[in-house]
Length: 133
Image 1 (cartoon, rainbow, N blue to C red):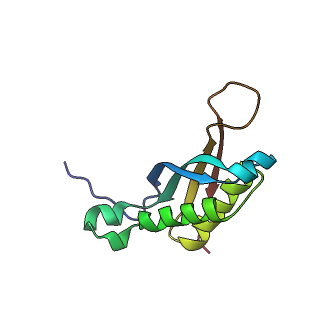
Image 2 (tube, rainbow, N blue to C red):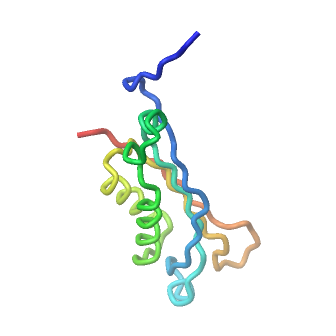
């Protein structure tokens, strides 16, 4: 029995960039804005990878080095009080710069938030889906 992949079949493939660690200056407290801290970022890109899987041609997929460069630019060159705002901006920039994406899931972790409590850190996750216009 053989099966054929149909491009019109509605499926969502994922290309994941996991645990991108960057030093940045986001936060509401003066110490965070002055000293900075490490942030861990996961991005799941939602797109059709069938053509790239069949062709083995990098032109048929997203250049993940360009995505990494975008993540680094947004995280290290801009400043936000809230991790939520950082995540939303990153998702919006992904949509703007990579129109082939159907959506993205962005997770940002602050492993050592400056609070008087012992826990593994803070994580924000947003999921955005886009329709072609």
